[in-house]
Image (cartoon, rainbow, N blue to C red; front, top):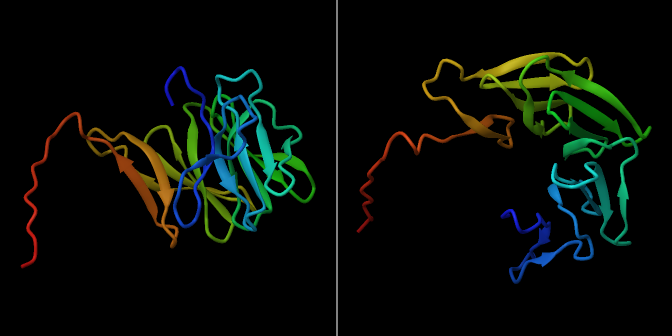
Length: 193
């Protein structure tokens, strides 16, 4: 969105049609939505531009929005595929925290001393989180023992500036690398006769 508009979560009908705002009565920013595995609720955050940075849950049937307890100053929520955890980042992106949906408690998963972390993605089995770390690394954190492994190091690549990472269905790391300011490519497309 532009500086004059707020970020809004939209729902698009499965068979196409006009996107509709999910929570039109909410006048603050809505970012980083994540669907629950059963499709009954969405977890999302406010932005740094809002007075109340926190994580929220929106129940689709009751249309009730509630703040996750203890989520003040947290952002970037990611709900695990099994629905057991919500991962969130501290305001300065130096800490990753886990909210256990069963016990309704937060615990620290990871803290970095310099730089930041972001673009968290859950493994398909909900056992690990993959995320980008400043220094052009992608790390994996196992939830059970908090073990951190570097799975991709792009620091030796020229002009390495990954701004986004994701995971393929087999947990292979996907990374966006923008080199558009440095090189222009020309392509010739051929069609089959």
